[in-house]
Image (cartoon, rainbow, N blue to C red; front, side, top):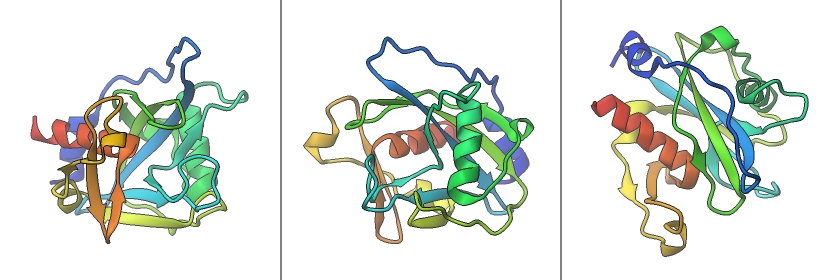
Length: 182
């Protein structure tokens, strides 16, 4: 799978706004894919975090009052969390929004596919940065059998280095997998 092929698969109109009736708080993430053999960047949250402690996720966070839209949120959070500056022009598409199970966030995922990235540096919101080969990672998908996880919709898991990715992040990965199959 080449980056140019991925770009054509994931290119979509960007609408960086969502509305919610107050049931959910708005957030966004940036799915960064880079390299000759596509690699996806994910992070592990520290155990002390208020939301999603210890979980594997994409860089991102909640909409800030100073953010013009959810794309700015994803770009700002990615820069803060892992020291990676992505421009609006480098974002080629977005996926369907996903909701979180426990924290009532509605998350809009954006996609950036770039040739390479600089060395990344984690801030206090990130315990570890993962550079995960995309194709083998997507092959680890399994149904999430934890009954407490399946309350809102079908759930999946993915595995990398004995770390389990589940919840909203896994549903984002499932969307990526579905687009690659179509």
